[in-house]
Picture (cartoon, rainbow, N blue to C red):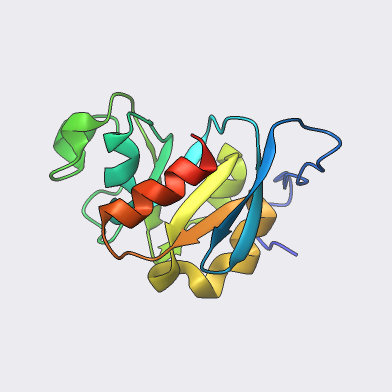
Length: 154
């Protein structure tokens, strides 16, 4: 059960393989997650996940940073996100801190994939998985993260 302050928030029901085509199981630190189709609304929990996504020219729609530099939406990413913002081509929803993402905001924005790190989000995996398919990866360098994203066929 996902708990939030608002009563009218809608939690996505995960699709079953019969409902979607092009499904694949992606192995990650918490087990395996089924991803169907091409994710369009990716929520990113931390810069270690944002960087390799941007290297693959994949633009997320929501982002949580490691520190609370910015309080509002990332309307001007080139200024709002140090080092990586210049590669972000659209405004991003602010999810708060990578280690404590704003679950209520995630529910409102309805991601079709959440990507975080095992280090920051292992304790939240069950809850995040109820919001959307969730991958938790090891932050052991971009090569390994890029391989995981290649396996996911983004």
